[in-house]
Length: 566
Image 1 (cartoon, rainbow, N blue to C red):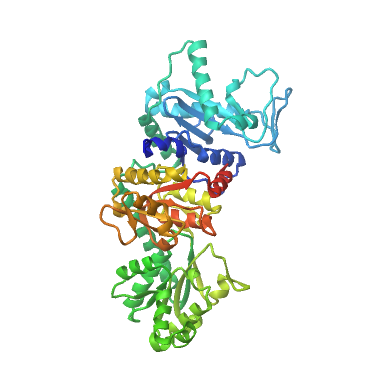
Image 2 (image 1 turned 180 degrees about the horizontal axis):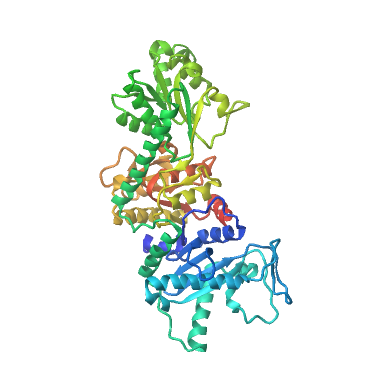
């Protein structure tokens, strides 16, 4: 393991985008194209790129915007104007610019970029006069058009134009570096100016602190692991308090369906519902879930409040008494005294099965159709297929009041963005936690390399201050066939979940960990399984603080992902 994970970060981590996620309503296809390219860039992890930066203090306008602002350590700052049109033309007589189907305009995109750059420089130098000596430059990028001129123009430098052809042979960061280098040469050699002041990492962070309040957002300091976890758990706690108010509004409904994507608080709201049932004197409810590990967690949290079991434990108990599932289901009521309230978590995992619905129907007074039932459903499962028939959630839960949860409160913005890119869709309306400015680590290696890479990642997180108990390795295959199992065989400190010592990091499958959360999640073996995109979404959204993804290079899954973001 000659190369440590710190050395690999430069190869496998993308630039830092602020904000971390793409606005769902971003109107510019050109900006979206460039942001996706930047997210895929693995060569410049120390760069910062602010996008859609509002300029409240513009030189000439009451309000304006910089499409992209690059903070390039050692080199300088570049402001980019993006024009996502397929055709670009300038009338030589009127001087008007014709950009696609837009109305003609006199003000050139180069003037737009230059004015935004000088407005930004004015703002920064008012706060710190030494920032006047940083190298500033402006660019105009036409990602979908080719830009031709006859003999150049006195209005802009050749390096200030990047078009579709340029982006086909060079990356956008390479074009940015070329512009900064040419601007420095022009200033020093042609105009005789002093060499610009290098832009340090500390200056980048200070500039970010100055710029982010301008757009009305808060940029946190680099957080330590304890503050990561405290912030994440406080956010979840506040979220559940808010959801408790929603529960007030719908509590009188006997049948309630809580719908939402991963990290929206479905299970937490179910816990609050269980506590309410007991407080109101209706007796302990029965809570049924799918995963054994989740059932253990819920049993600890709801001790003396609810009876918690898994669906398989329920059927196993019935089989013990009656010998077969069919006969057992018919006699459920003789074994389990029907409860006043039935709680079902992650209903999509087992209500597809007729015997499950039949058994649960007998576990609650009045049955699933008329009893007091509160269930959670992952919003990605809009349709449930049973045999040859297809049912919607409304068919399965006819007569239930639906409570839709749309805000992701668990994962950090950059992790949420990665989950959206891998899965191909967004299961949330928004991610509300503050950006930690740390990009998730995505590493690719051969089968021979990935074991060492897993050990490096584990050591890196330990150096950051996370304990073994605050990490978990999740795989898309059986735990005994996973990368972590191979690492354990080679003497690295990993062990099956529930069997680990204090210094060992536990590992299990993504599906077994569904419904739970952990500060640090390391994902491996994700090309496997019938639906790797769903596995990736579930795995990434288990994280509260940090994420690392290790994928073998030859995987068709990672090639599909790279094509998607490119």
